[in-house]
Image (cartoon, helix red, strand yellow):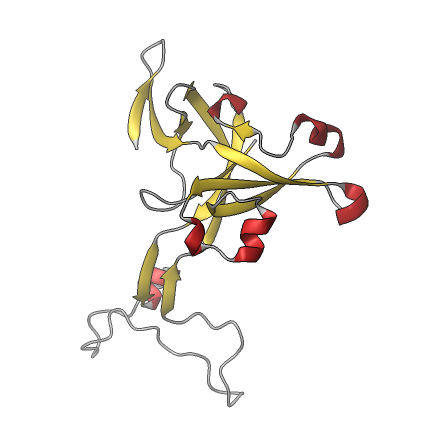
Length: 193
C-alpha cells in the first residue's frame, strides 16, 4: 500500500495492483454453454507443467492461471479469442469489486478468531483469560452445530465491493485502488468492473 495525493492535496490510502495483461482463451455463449462468459489466462508457464488436454484447449498457450468472468450477452461481441485485456479497460473514478484470498493465520483461539472476551483474571481463576468458557451442556448431551471454537483462520475468499480507482498507468499496467484489498503481497486478485 501507499499514499496517493489528489490535485487538491488530499491524501488517500491506496493499493498498487499490477493488472495483467490477460488473454482471452475461450468465449462461452448462451446457446451452447447456457450462459455467456469470457475465460481468460494469466501468467505464462512451461508447457511441460500442463496436461495435454489443457494445452489442447488453450491451443498451445501455457497459462499459470485460468479464470472465467460472466459477461452480459450484449457485451460478448467486444471480446475475441486471443485478444489482450489490460489496465486500459479501467479508468480513474470507476467503482470496482475486488475478490481475493485473505491472509492465512493458521490455527487460532476463540479470542482472535471470533472476538471472545475471555474470562476475568481475578475471582479464583488462574489460567483462563483466553479460554472459550462453556460450550453448552445442561439440557443436551452434545455440542450444538455451529458452535464457535478455535480452528484455522484466514485463507478465505473475500469480496470487497465499491472500491474506487484513483489512477491508471497504461504503460506499466498498474492500477491504484483506494483502500485495502484482501491478501498478502503477490496475491492473485480479481477486479470486477
